[in-house]
Image (cartoon, rainbow, N blue to C red; front, side):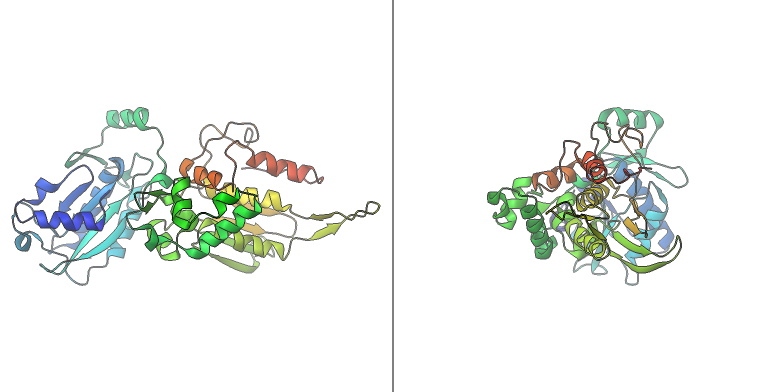
Amino acid sequence: MKSDEDIKKLFNLLETHIADDLEGQDIDFKEWVEKSINDNVNKAVEMAVGMANGGGGSVVFGIRDNVKGREKAIQGIPRGIDEKLIQKAVYDRTDPHITAIFDWIKVTEGYGRILVMTVFPGMPPYTETNGKATIRKGKDCVPFTGSMRTEMFSAIGISDFTANVVQASWKECFSAVAMERVRTMMSQEHAPDTLVRMSDEDLLRSIGALKDGKLTIGGLLIVGNNDAIAKYVPNNRWDFRRMISSTDYSLKDGYNAVIPVALYEIERYMNSENEITTIEVGFLHPEFALYPKIALREALLNAFVHRDYRIPGSVMLKHYKDRLILTNPGNFIGGISPDNILHHPPSARNSHLADLLDRLKLVNRSNLGVPRIYKSLLIEGKEPPQYR
């Protein structure tokens, strides 16, 4: 994946090369068609599909082909073009939906700005909603045939969106508030003191959230700031509803936040209404919450770790008087079903994110999360959870 700085360096090479010479598997240059915005939108959709199927990459709009010299080659993008409308078109016209990232790069030539579309690798195959599909092969996006799709499935299996690297300095994406929540949770879970006391950078590097000075998407979901989360993981969101009936609620909250902050906010709402019962047993007076905190924490972490971040939706907790309903986007994977979830070997959609949380001692990769939920409920004489 090319960063903005990488692309700016390529602009300098336009003095002695045409744009086609600089293209590769993860970079393409396209001229902006000034007479028709629809032509540009159609090209963006086509290129997004090709790049997504080919492992991700960047498409730079506003560069003329077969022309040498920066001043002649850099055409730029006219004023009045709304990149959000193009982003929406790419999303609406792809299946599964592709959430491409659009950035502006300022230049001195042409219209003074260049539009860059970045497409992250996901879980192909992707097509346009009309069924058309291409795949990036070297410098070209070629028709994505049935035999190619079969070959892809056997070669790569399922990829992990959370292992992708964010093309920005980690400090630009970092939230000190989120990191403080992480350290608090680590202390509560009795993580080694040497790990808790590491500097921010050393801690992130030691668990694998930093690669070459940049956060992975998984790392961003743990310690990212609101702007970076909104830009790079726009589908991430939590929601809480205190339900009066199946259609009405008395309290509503939710927004795009990193996992530790989302956990804190949801648990804060639950703690205010999680009825405590005291049982007198001789000199002992143990207290039992209506919903055991261990079960609630494990269920919420599972929902965030295993949701599909490529599709819109939220981790939603609905609190009724007599039950909790927790939902998240995405289906069961790896042969797991509601019937075998308690005993099936673990299968994570977001293995990198799960690994990071495991190294922070916030989750356990040994398939203990679901058994902990069952045990904490059953040991107090409560009904086991229902998975659907």
